[in-house]
Image (cartoon, rainbow, N blue to C red; front, side, top):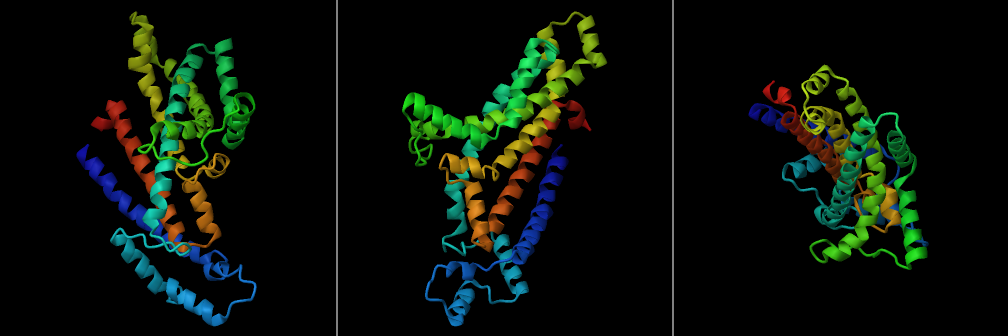
Length: 317
């Protein structure tokens, strides 16, 4: 098991390097120029000398290979550089937004798991009954409802019926936990509902498949309690595909909540991603892509470890 963990950790390095190289050259192919965008609001026009000075300041006058070497050297030192648009260090640009997005993702995941696993198991046990149909309607509605639209409904209901709106200015959890939860619980509910719909359907399908296995019939024939059969024999084996879905959805939330963040006035990673691409901010976009790629890699690594913990056959193999 230790060798497997070390091997997976070492495989992360070439994967991240490949992502870094790919995004560096792709950003240079994207049409547009950050220098021209920066001076696009100037009504009197900008001289070529001014544009050349700005490009030199940003290092864009250097040959492509020189920019690439500088970028990779910075990565080797864990230095992401500074934003070309704001001039601020990239780790400062990302730090607060990362904390916000990570908290929303964790809260959404907790809500999704608390809804999906009990409902999925219940639907599988009560297959083709009114309970099963109700759970399926609940999950299909979640798949068909965009999280940002559900967020708008939450805001309208709170405003119309309770004459109250969630705080619009982000407060970190360590500063004021109550204020923080009042703001983030609503986007977490909106995202978590759709998230739970995917996991519920997967849990139901996996449980139905496992409950038809011979070892489940044998356990029932031995007279084991239904609760014991579900927890010890059925649920653990059914959790493997469900765990994969939950993990991939969590990694997606780290950069894919652009519209939901705008609805709730959250300045998270998704919104920062859009702004960096719109401004052709090469360094910030590269850092954000690396961050999202690292999130997927780490989540997949943790899922593999969870597989080995849940299923002893994988661990011993």
